[in-house]
Length: 199
Ligand SMILES: Nc1nc2c(c(=O)[nH]1)N[C@H]1C(S)=C(S)[C@@H](COP(=O)(O)O)O[C@H]1N2
Ligand SMILES: [Mo]
Image (cartoon, rainbow, N blue to C red):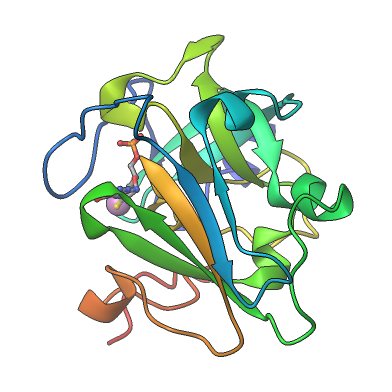
């Protein structure tokens, strides 16, 4: 029963970890890889892979909900939250920053309101299930957003709003549509309201 309450309308659970993305899997070259932060921030940044690895990481369990209908409960991730980066002053959003755009290799983008991206259920992850991410799930770095079991105060959105192969965060004063959001998916993507498509 408890588990049933964790499954949003129209979703069914899977034990596998399906792989979903458009386009090819990028090759990771540590020497040239970087992570950029720009837009409505006090200081633009360009972090190397070693600098990203030096950021303290936390572990979190998330229930993932894919817009195509599968949910995967109790997934284990390791990484850092944007909330942590902002609290530590590693990223300083300007007062007018109200949205973020995630930018990934090969141009995948997805947008979120900054207040949602600052929730504890939005993680920038390096590890899944105790080991570094696999290439198909976003190695070396991906964003992931899901439900924290039992935590009802957070906004829970579909998994497309976590970019695999994440390469940067752009802070925006006005909202802009990401890849799927511009291709018919709902801009908010709330899993409990079944906001799958915008039409
Ligand atoms: N870079 C990138 N990230 C992406 C996507 C993509 O096409 N490219 N697809 C999204 C979608 S639609 C989903 S459901 C999840 C799937 O994550 P998974 O393959 O680890 O299950 O990745 C999201 N992140
Ligand atoms: Mo998806």
